[in-house]
Length: 131
Image 1 (cartoon, rainbow, N blue to C red):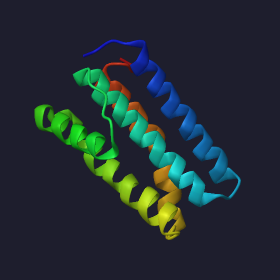
Image 2: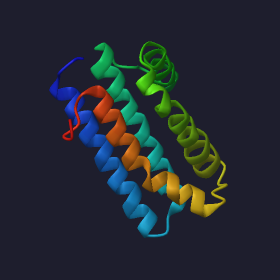
Image 3: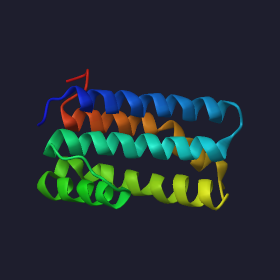
């Protein structure tokens, strides 16, 4: 695993963006909260890929493909795949872009549980404070 301050900073950024998502959710702005939660998910995935490979994904498809490649080499990463694509499809695509944030309880759950995704990505990258 690549030990760099950059990975630590990206995970911190993911946590900050997720905090923004929770703030927006609390203010009743579910659409923007969904997009912030997606961005936090993507940043955490980016950091995981950078930590594991030493290479930073350049575009969104590179991040998605990088996650799939990591999972092919390490089955411990497999649980992140469904959670990543769930947020990409529901939070980013359906809720933010299309304005379809129903059922709200499911969107709220995904936004809130993005913290768990970040924790798991950080742990798998070897940067968790719990390891």
